[in-house]
Amino acid sequence: MASLPPTLDFAKTEEEICAKWEKEQTFKTQDKLSLERGDEEYTFYDGPPFATGLPHYGHILAGTIKDVVTRHACMRHLHVSRRAGWDCHGLPVEYEIDQKLNITHRDQVLEMGVDKYNETCRGIVTRYTKEWERTVTRLGRWIDFENDYKTMDPTFMESVWWVFKQLFEKGLVYQGYKVMPFSTACGTPLSNFEAGLNYKDVRDPALVVSFPMLNEDGSGGSGSATEEVSFVAWTTTPWTLPSNLALCVHPTMTYIQILDVKTQKRYILAQSRLSQIYPIMNNKKKWKPAMAAELYTLEKTFVGSDLVGKKYKPLFDYFADPATTPECKNYFCILSDNYVTDDAGTGIVHQAPAFGEDDYRVCLAHDVIYKGQEIPCPVDSNGMFTSQIPEVAGVHVKKADETLIGIIKQTGRLVQKDQLEHSYPFCWRSDTPLIYKAVPSWFVKVEEIRDKIVENNKKTYWVPNQVKEGRFHSWLTDARDWAVSRNRFWGTPIPIWCNDDLSEVVCIGSVEELHQLSGVKVTDLHKDVVDAITIPSKTKPGEVLRRVDEVFDCWFESGSMPYAQK
Image (cartoon, helix red, strand yellow):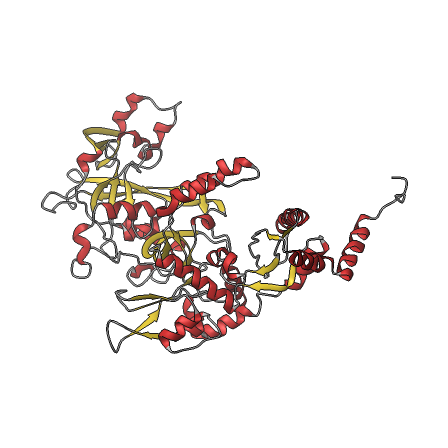
């Protein structure tokens, strides 16, 4: 201690050490000696960061921990490959370009040209690599920046194709129609993980809407107020009501038919949810059971299963015409499912299968809709209503609520209007509200191998151990099939070529395989290049297979790093 100077400039000392390492090529020499000795390989995977932004505290902390682990391995005479890598594709890049070019709709990219759009994306992905190198080196971390890899390199992209083909050949890939968190600003579905990154408290309209019950012969729903009986459902997403196809009750919950004293209208709702339409019942100081007679008259009692199969008058007629929507004969009926609760609303849940995960599941289970069948979804990839709903065509769903509420009120179907403050998911990239939307996507089967994944996690040594048994275990046990496709442009294209009805599907695993089947040799695998390539059909001479439109989720590309970085 006596040899230490009275004041020590730690920052300057660190800089001197970094300079010494650089001059003497310490990291390279250590790596070279390890290879010459034939040290056993220590496998260390470090996912690539985006180089479109500067490193922040999270990168610095994690990088320091990773450096400690790899240095310790080297001190135990193990060889550790430490290549820097860069995540170059995906929404972070596209979103920045969209902001720069004022792109708000997919059609604008198509008008501009996918090749020009992708070239613009390519121009910014390595913008901060030198700043990253300078910061990481200054921290004293040893990592090879000279032999770095990029997820946009053709060799990396080709390896992603290879990984996907392995899954495809094992029967773990399928195309599905699934309701997913959807960013209307980015025009693409998100994973459930991404959807959980950015919740905010918001105020949304909360409506109770009536659905007049029809008679067994389909008549009714237009009688006088004293004759008509209506189911009443609660929703905080009025924009989904034009797509309503069914109502759902709980099979064992108690429901009642009442006559509202003030309006002389008859409603059916859960007995435990009378407080939804009579809020005074929530005020324990003011409410007295004797006051009930002033509000309503109890007429009938049911259990939920008694109501299943009952038909009702549609709220809107957009999808109720058999001439244009033949499937509508299955629509506008009462279903049941255990997911319905009585902690809010009326105990009757409006079902719009295009915009709700449970809605889709329940309607599918009750044969209201069928797998592979198109379902009413009058909203485009940018969250705008299509011409199917003319009153709000071209209007974003979140801005269409008041217009739709006005229509519902004019038709006499609005029972109650209120505001609800609740937590709602926002897009982590654009900071705009997400919606849930049914989209065709390519999936990797995770649920089929979930038990195996959970067992392998038990064999894994975690630090700290509670992560293994807690958060990560819970995530794995609830893991769902992974939607790996994105309806975007700047990414590794999904290597599936098929005909229109998917009766002939080919998955390509390499550049050479594509060359053999198509006769075209490529040096770039981006969308603007490979989309023009066709493969002759083997089952229908004269016809060709074309590549599907989607690209990979950039998380899939990053996850392919153990194979693709080599």
